[in-house]
Image (tube, rainbow, N blue to C red; front, top):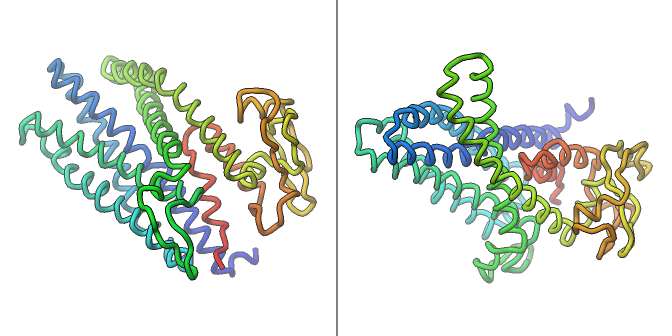
Length: 355
């Protein structure tokens, strides 16, 4: 229990908790916002009162998650500076600008029109209200864009160089459109949309199973199931593309996420670890259950690997993730369920040591 007296560990645990809440609830606003645009649009087109009441009902869920997003997002932004001051100072020229874009473009757009969306029913023209709903959904998804731009840039920095310990931006567009950016944004967009669809569907199914307003919630369940059938295959493919990026750009991260201690040469098949117990000190897995030859299909859609999967033992201790078991299981709990693909990055932030 010595960690309870270690302020560095405690501050990182605090950040991990803040990031966890910020990823669990505010991400739902991006998908629910799109759902609100759909149902309100259907109401304007058909004038069916069911769609009107759906828009009113589900907007309450949106506000709840928006509030949690504000309550966790602002402290988390300050924690970047308090926990990783040297890092923030070194890359602030770009990282600070992108976080500022998220606040100025996305959050303020969302917040400005939120009041009209909530309290403008029967007070403003229905078309104006629909525009406000679209702006709220757009703001939520622009927030995802800028946050994932910052996150992807930390995975594959581009557009500048380090000069005397400071990152100097030479090309903002190149820095924004870094190699990880497009896939990261799309992967998170479809993940949040899919999560929101299943959340709405789960709540609707609960009401139906309890015989409460079954006709009302059957409509929302049909809408989200139809959307989920279209979204889920796209999300699976985007997850595959994100895995390919880690495979090519971050081999040490891939080895930790898969608890691979030994290198698998190019041209050979590799087993996929279903569950294991990594042992950092012994540099091996105490036990594991694997699916033979499956990792190649996950990374490249074929059995034999084009490039090697470098094992953790072939990296210097300073160049590989610490606490392999934490990274391994955080990836499986969150990423494998296609829900929150950036959670392993939150674990990395909590463990990084910028000296």
